[in-house]
Amino acid sequence: MQPLLNIAVRAARSAGEVIVRSLNRVESLTITAKGRNDFVTEVDQAAEAEIIGQIRRHYPQHAFLAEESGASGDSDTVWIIDPLDGTTNYLHGFPVFAVSIACQVKGRLEHAVIYDPMRGEIFSASRGSGAHLDNRRIRVSKMRGVEGALISTGFPYRENVRYLDPYLAMLRAVSAKAAGVRRPGSAALDLAYVAAGRVDGFWEIGLSPWDTAAGTLIIQEAGGMIGTLTGGEYQQGGHIIAGNPKVYAALVELLGPHVPAELRTP
Ligand code: IPD
Ligand code: CA
Ligand code: CA
Image (spheres, rainbow, N blue to C red):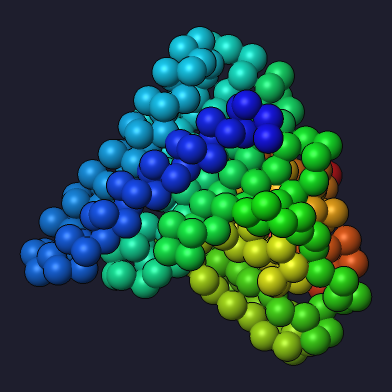
C-alpha cells in the first residue's frame, strides 16, 4: 500500500474509533435538539482533529480542506476531509455514516479512503492501482441501464429545498424504471457503494468537496464514472451523477430534461 494511503487508512480508523465511542453517548442523550447538535459537532471536530493530527505528524507541510476547520496550509498536496459524513443519521443512531479522506496532489486526486466504522469496511484507492474494499479488488456493477437497477440518491434539504420540484421530477423518472431507489444518508458511502457495485448509480444536488473527493477517485478506479447532472466534467462539490458507465449515461439522459437552468454545466 502507498505510504500516503496507509496514513489515510490509519487516520480514518482512528476517527472511526472516536465516532463509535461517542455513539453510545449520543444515543442516550435526552437533552434538547440543539444540545444534541452541539454534541455531534464536538464529535465531528474531535474526529477531524484526530485525522489532521495524524497526517500532520507525518507530513507537517501538507495543506488541508476539512469540513469543520476549513482550508489551512499552503502546499501542492491537499487533504480533503469529511470526518463524519452522515451526521443526521449519527445523531439519531441510524447506523449509516462514514469517514472520508482524499489526498490531492497538484489538483489531481491520488489517494482516497472511505471508512464505515459500523461495518468495519475500508473502501480505498490510489490512482492507477484500482479500488479495494478491505483487501479485495472492487468493480462497479455490470447493470446495462436504469431499468432494473438499484439507484441511490440524496434528497435536497436546507437551501437546496428550492430544487425540490425538479428533484421530484427526477425521482419520478428514475423510480418509474429502477428496481429501487435508496436514500441512505451518507453521500460518501453512496459513492463507495457505487464503486463496489452494491448500487448501480447515484445522483444528488448540492454536495461539497469533502462529500465527494474520496468517492470520486474510488469510483474512477473501480471503472465507474462521475460527472455533473448534465454529464459534464465534475469539479469537486456541487451536483453529481455517478454510476457504472452505462448507468451513468442512462441517468444523464433520464435526468437531463428536469435539470434546472442554473444547475446545468457545459
Ligand atoms: C451530508 C450527507 C448526506 C447528503 C448531504 C451531506 P454531512 O453530509 O452526505 O447524505 O445528503 O448533502 O451534507 O453533513 O452528514 O457530513
Ligand atoms: Ca458530508
Ligand atoms: Ca460531515
